[in-house]
Amino acid sequence: MEYVTLSNGVKMPILGYGVYQVTKDECERCVLDALKIGYRAIDTAQSYFNEEEVGNAIAKSGIPREEIFLTTKVWIEHYGYEETKKSVIESMKKLKTDYLDLVLLHQPFSDAYGAYRALEELYDEGKIRAIGISNFYVDRMVDFASFNRIKPMVNQVETHIYNQQKEMKEWADKYGIQLEAWAPFGEGRGGIFDNPVIARIAQKYKKTPAQVMLRWHIQRGVVVIPKSTHIERMEENFNVFDFTLSDEDMKTIAELDKKTSSFFSHQDPNMVEWFVKMVEERKKNNDSSKEKKNW
Image (cartoon, rainbow, N blue to C red; front, side, top):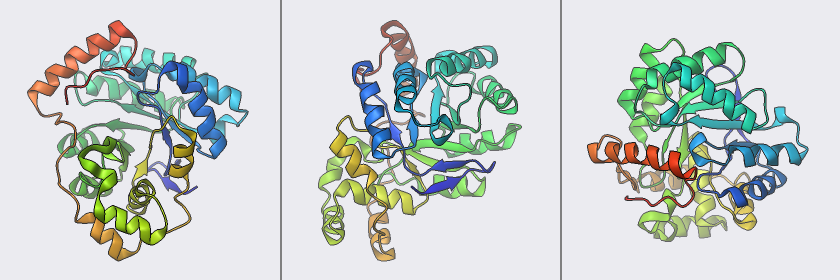
């Protein structure tokens, strides 16, 4: 496993396992499979409604807690200083741990500043080893880095070969913020797995398109958290440390950038309204695994 070092000196695996839309029924088994394969970073969130199952898997795995890098994210309904602090303590209970390695603010809405102050305080108390943000665009990221007492250590954003976030990475590097990719395969949109350039490079290295894309992220210094419920795919995603893409191949992949989201823009007022509705729906359903997307 390769690691990145966050701005505060904490080491974070560059490859982890994400559990977005992994159902409660499957989550414990999937996390146990991932840990058996060798994954040592697990990424969950309050709004995934599977923190308890993640905690059960880690407890059953027999792997010492300090060997696992555990991330969760605060959901919008818990923003604001008091609510965020309570929600993180509740997440720790569900995850069966007395500390978290990384806690992110999940979305750039509502009282994000009050929420972040709570994360700063929990960080000061030693309950969180690193704090950060998720889905914050470049301007908001620089804003948060400039006007908070503690700079975010991570920004987790949509990043894949069709939306490479080159400007984001330049600014993140400037402020010492680690970039982390959600949807490192763009959820397969735009025929990403069938891209002929990726296919040709994969054939050259006797690897799969998925492995080439993950290797591309890793060589850029971007943390990745691919998700699969199939152990064979988990193993495939993990086996990306035995080859290196050439500079020429890295440049070729860089030319695939479309510089647009494969999903949506957080700056679109229609999407902001959708998030408002989603907060209520998730609160009511206590589930996000079967969520109907309008993007």
